[in-house]
Image 1 (cartoon, rainbow, N blue to C red):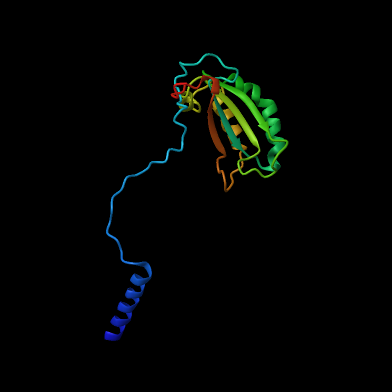
Image 2: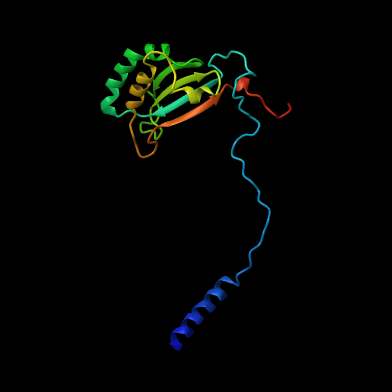
Length: 172
């Protein structure tokens, strides 16, 4: 028993010698890391903007469609894009769906993009719950074509604000 204790004690001494004595806890200042650009605030109600070619906000959905469904998806778009655009909720505009024809073949974020514009950010919350006619049904059909993958299971969504309308705090 005494031998085992001595070997543990020897091991602990070696660790302390190798790594140095442990210091007690200390307190210091924290330097926060800001990862967003604080000079580009979002104006959620759109009141500081006029009319812009794209709208006040642009929403980009990126996703992929399984190759075996490409033809079905393109036929669905040809048959339903007009109805989708006509039945969007108030303040939302369907700008279209595009496919990458030049660039990386296996994009991790998908090769398809669907673009919408919004007059204000509150439309994001109303998006899937409002709309005229069969908008919700058409939206569900559009989303059903998406490929579920490892990287971006549901694709991705990006919200852009029109640069010319972005208020800044830079004072310039």
